[in-house]
Length: 634
Image (cartoon, rainbow, N blue to C red; front, side, top):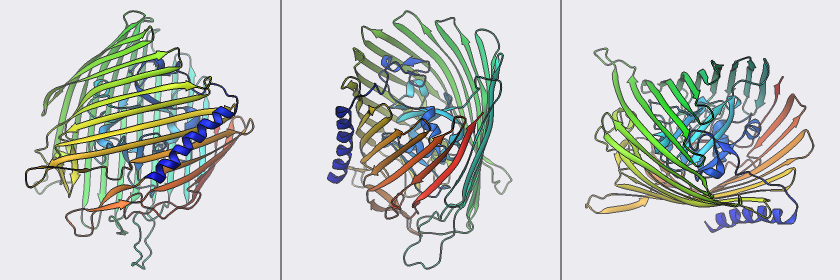
């Protein structure tokens, strides 16, 4: 622990000293606009929400990688399985919370997986990075604006849309280690009142063995390959001066081989999964005072698993409809009001003896309202409330109070108090490991911090502390979903960014997370213990990037993941063994040369070929690997 803290503190101090030593320009602007923080365009200076924007330039520097890789480098987020075989499922740990507490959006619309592989969150393997424009990450409980699952935070993945000319052709082709190949091709453009984007991505790899081979086993474990396709199509129609309609369709599928568990090889197990996300977004402009938005989406996830024991075929369907409007009441007061409907269905598509199918569903109706005090002599305030009407778990009111104050565009202080409500997922209730007697979860969240520009705007520093309490928290323990009495999580996030000279960027980040659960012991007394399985107390990253010439860009990063616990289910065991996993550090590098309308790029990952660590106990990790390719846009 001391060694971890020293490494990360040294990185932050080093970044600060660079800023002292040389001239610079301002790194970040409080005037930057975001949509995710308030559901309509708003300056960062006017909201106290903690937001990270991964822009298009950064996305383009990750074309040989995945959405999970990019998110894993964000402060306070750990993606379980990101260093494992490409076909291994990715688990989002956001501020110490598991995937089921994070809402993932595509262009502002929640995307859900009713089959419940990772709670309700969509499987990140479905999302190709090539078709993403930017990502906005909103931290902390956001139930008021985004519903029940947004207890840890919100990740808004914004897809590519129409261009500025009638026809624009774009794509990329990449080859890499383990016989990896990825290619994408797309068309985007705008003609008169219509814009469009259509793109296709194909990815394939031989991978590595998902399970690690014990030293006592002489047999060579086979590679577990993975193949994925993705199609994204969007059309925007400016029907009138004020009315815009945007139908969309996204489809993705993958096939993968997987092993039998920790240290257990399998040459039989296979998976086929596909995801359909379709619908329409509409917007009606209320002059220059606001907009009315209407969104509808239908999502379907099919999963088919075949093992040596049996087959599983799950069909998950989600329906989403929402109408909301924001309006500028005065130049310092804004209002937002809306109502949404959600329905989730899970179908076991393997017929029973009587040739029937097992089907379960649940739905909610949720009206919500927020008021925003805007730049009132530097003071900003959001007050919001949502009333959730659940067809099984009754009615629940949640709220958000988010004040902030900006001092002369140099220093922003902010705080948030929010509550959350989350019903059990269909998987936790009705799967073979489900528990129909589960209680709903209730959360209280607290957050405070500062963001400041120091040294004549040469250094951008943000420090945030948070605390989250979840009552009746649901966990998967010993092949069963159960309620704990309470889980308490807390943490600190530190981010510093400097540009010591015009072409050099230095970023350093550190996150500390701690969590404990309280449950009833057989004696009837409360017992408390750590519940951060696969979630480290300490993570940190240092990034250096340099625009060497007009065409040449290079960057490198060091990411440190601290010690953490894991649960190991030995063969034929019905209870888990607690395992302590050691800390590890991964060094990556990137280079590109831009020719104008085309560029070549190279990723070098895990440069030191570090294999002497466990990301997930009993599963292999990727050693040194590379991807190189070309991208173009004409």
